[in-house]
Structures are given as structure tokens and as C-alpha cells.
Length: 126
Length: 203
Image (cartoon, rainbow over all chains, first blue to last red; front, side, top):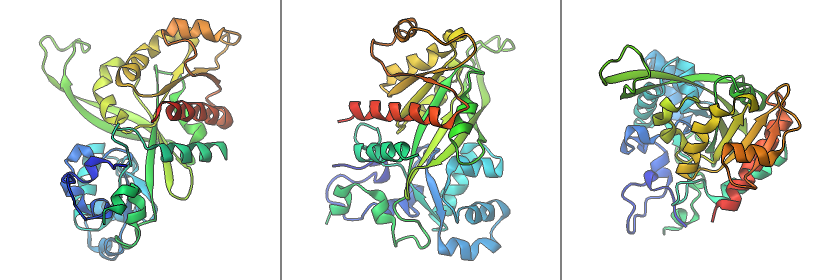
């Protein structure tokens, strides 16, 4: 079993830091374009507490992210290109104001089989 | 010690670390490709639980001669708009559908979009099948699972699926569905066929 290397770029060998360390605020370690357009963000309690004092764009992102939002949705919300949304989200994540939830892919770069099975179940139940 | 890694469920570990973070959230994406006006946005709208949103991506590329104004190749910045929608699958999986620009000159943005995707629905208007060749070529070359979805336009019913596969140069038996892009159930079935195909190809 393996996880997306992009989530743990130095993961060769016995790293003991679990995945969440990489999805909760460690986006600065992601080269900008590595945060995919479908990455989900959620506001942290600290982010929500500090939102009133943030610049308008940052505040809008954090407050919208009380419900999970994708990077694409953040871009649409602010009316900015994806690249701009990515920078804003990365900064907020680096400050632990947002948690980032990255897609989970296997070594072949495709979603893992268990996820495809859950997706299929969900679609059939619609 | 490394069991969290081995489990491979990033979301499991998300719980409790970032206060306010949801449990086990995982995004998935499916691309909806096809020529201009073939019904990509209609299909996304039929499936999405929110009205389709539009986002822009700025692209820098070498001018490829499509723009008449460029006599010599030079760097140009292109803004490409994408429509997308959202389908909540269960308490942790969220599926995003991205309508991708159909023109081959935008191939450079497909790489980013295609990375990590479940696969693609290639929407086809049988009256203008040339429009989908670029998308089919791309997905075949990248090994991305795709399903051919024939959108129901007037005068396009009663066609033989094998003739269509032949015309599109996809192998016999390649997944092909007939859809009404306005109809949720019809579009859902196209997604199911795609995911079944992706599962059959996954190890």
C-alpha cells in the first residue's frame, strides 16, 4: 500500500509523521501547482477565530470554508484564476487557518481502487 | 508506527488534528470533454448539486499560430474558462466534474486536470464527431479511462454503436453510452459506466 508521494515528499524510509501533518497546513511544502484544482479546504477553529481581522479575500475564503470548498470553488467565489486562489489558500494553510484535504492516489497516479468502489456505490445509490 | 501510512487513508488521520477539519474528506474528479456546444455544461448542470460554477485558469504557452495576430511565435497568456459542478457521494467523498475546453490548442491545461482524475466522459455530437478527436487522442495517449457518451441530438438515434466506435477509432467494445445531457439519471449512468471501466482497468 502506498500513498501519494506528493503528500509526503520526503517519505522515503521510516518517517513517522502521519499523513495528516501534510494535509493540515503543510501545503507550503507543496510546489504551487501541486495543489490540484479539486483539493478541498476546510476552515480551522483558529482560522475562524482570526477571520474578522483578515484581509477581505482571506476572510471570505475562511468563512466560506466552514463547508468544504474545492480550490476551484474558491476561485469562483473570489472571481480569480485558479493560480491566484492557490496562492491565497496555500498562505492560509501555512498559517493553519485552513486544513487542506488532498486527493488520494496510488502509485499509478490514479485514484485508489477502494475509492473507485465507494464512488461506484454512491453513484448507484443516486 | 507507519500504519497510518500503510492504511493509506489520509482522511482518517485528518480527524482531530486541524480543529474544525472534517472527517476523512477526499475529493475526486471526472473530466467532461468534447467539442464546443456539445453539451458539457448541460451535463455538468444535470448532475451537480449546485448550479455550475465557472473558474478561470491563466495559461502561458507558445503561440501556436492559431491567433492570426502572431506572425512570429511568442509567449502568450491565455485565460481558459472551465465550468464545473459538485456531487456529494457520501459523508466523505466529494466528486467534482470539470467541463474541459474542447479545443486541442488547450492541451497544455489538460495535463494538470487529468492528473489524479478518475477518468473522462467524452461527449459526442454525432453530427460533428470531428470535434471530439482531440479529446479521445489525448485520453488514449495518457492512459486515462474514458467513456464515449453520445448526446441525443435530433436525427442521431438509431445509429449502430460499432459504427460509431469505428468512426472514432476506439477499440471494439470500448465503453459507449447514449445520454441525454439534460437528464440526471442518464448522466449518472454514464458516470457509472466510466467508473466500472476505471475499476476494470485498475489493479
